[in-house]
Image (cartoon, rainbow over the protein chains, first blue to last red):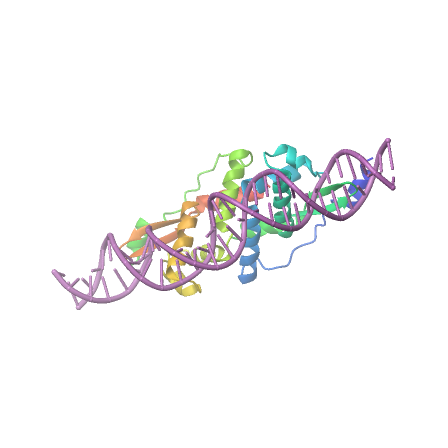
Length: 113
Length: 113
DNA sequence: TGCGCCCATCGCAATCCAACGATAGCGCCG
DNA sequence: CGGCGCTATCGTTGGATTGCGATGGGCGCA
């Protein structure tokens, strides 16, 4: 049963507002970091894959992309460090999912340009 | 008089719609390229500077940033190649300005995530 | 308990990026 | 016509990225 998965991972997105500023030095650095994390076609593809699947995927990404497993893992690490995605251990496999808050933040920062 | 400047550079933004797709392989590459061009704090700062000034600036950017002139020129080149900004020669100095179409495109791509 | 699967990490090589100083081209002003 | 200010470009250096195979740890299942 997959009901256990949803309980531990990919929690329902909290719609809390983000009060951080849209511009200024800190916002510049934040936007640059997020943009750099997106600045690779494979990472954009991975992010879209995670969004489309809604539910969490794991090594399935390796099958979808023409990249080695270690390379995919590296890209996932970059995006996780940027806060774009989240990865939680779920038994034998790892559950990756999008972090909606960061995605909203990115939209706000880009929209504020 | 500055009226001559506005005539040759920074034309009034054309509000033509962009019919290109928001997702797919080509869109992924496009978003990755635009994000990479933004993936540096100095470039975000420069872009904001150009947006705030509305009118075009040139070497004034060098005075605003703690970077050498050649470095700023390099960043401008990266953003110009990505289509984010435009640079036209205007007598002794060079007139840089934002490319509104690309900015809208970026917002659409990020918003479509 | 031991095997097998899934994934992260290490180590390495190739490539790319960022930053700088130095140099060269190009208008303008005197 | 000769200098001067403004930019782009070149060449270089150090550091970061990207990609891969190989290795190792952790968890479930037999």
